[in-house]
Length: 523
Image (cartoon, rainbow, N blue to C red; front, top):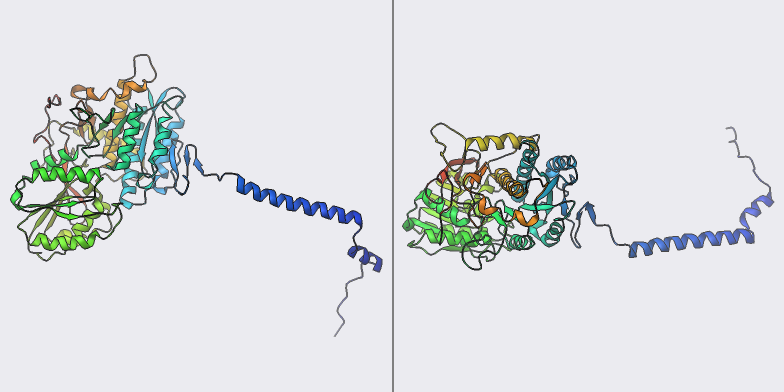
């Protein structure tokens, strides 16, 4: 076998010795380099310890201390880390970018954009899409009326927990260049939302609620009842919903029962159970009680309570059950009643607009709806309410086919895919934006580019009669306290496949409004 080649010798013994023994000069250089490295690493560590962590997400948006949510206000296309909002946020950003400085007023949509509840995420998406649809109409399809409208998204975080910082930022936006003139959204009847509305209206900002229905987040006649100066709503109150349900169903109180949440502080359930109780005077049974978790979107243990309540319902003569609670507990109750012991008896559940979430609730047992169980709720809007159909006459007043058709054209711009409309959220948000823009433009003096902040909040008493808003959900005629008068209430039934079937329009006053749509004197 041939020998392997060997590497050539590259140096003499003295050369190798010089490599091992460093001169004093080399030692000095090495010491200086080492010290520099150590000092550099130490300085880096100190800098890491002393420099505040960058918690910004985008312009006007940051992660609050102890939270990973992006919270704040932005109109540049930021989606707050929510993939479903990316498309419509980009569209809003592009529309805003086309506006010139000084030619616009700003409207904010205040919502818990980063909610982790699946029903709320759907609601939020549809509301933002509805708001953008009207922003586009206001800027491109309104005969060049001014001012133009800039739309911004304002995130209050999961459960509206970070409302304070976001509301403070909105209040700071009333001056140039933003000129914030109205806030829409504020879509849940919770304590955090009530405090948000209190702060915003206290700062002189007009607020238009979309789906808040609680009677105690509203103004009214009498001393001390104008707690939210500048608040308007496009949805009927819980009391009006209950009156519309009663007018529609003509329920026999002797054969009716109320199931209600005992958790206090939830203004939706508190006012709904009061309204239902008022319509059930003379009922022979005391209400059946349950207590939802502090966060009503949590499952908690209420399903166990409902299993027991269904046994008690079977012991009564009741045929109709009024349910005063949020949608998570409503779904649990429906599932429990679907497997009740008295399956031979038929029941009808009547509830408020939280029923609109059921269609998208994957935990709803569709088989329960086949067990002689009818679920109907007072919706805030429905796509079939103002759409002509065989055997169903569209009311002559209180709304119009044309207004709804206009909305359908506009909402098509909000997404490449068709926006689902059965839950009514996009429709109501569109109408709230229309109402905000109406007030802003009515308050703008001739020859001015935008209104003064204080002039917008004074517009609500004039939104009636021929100055009403032709809403896609029906006429928006406000009383002197910013509440809709005799607003159309679609009664919707949850079909066996989980779809939401329109039944008919009901009216709080028992009949549609007159052509003048002028609220009567009260008190």
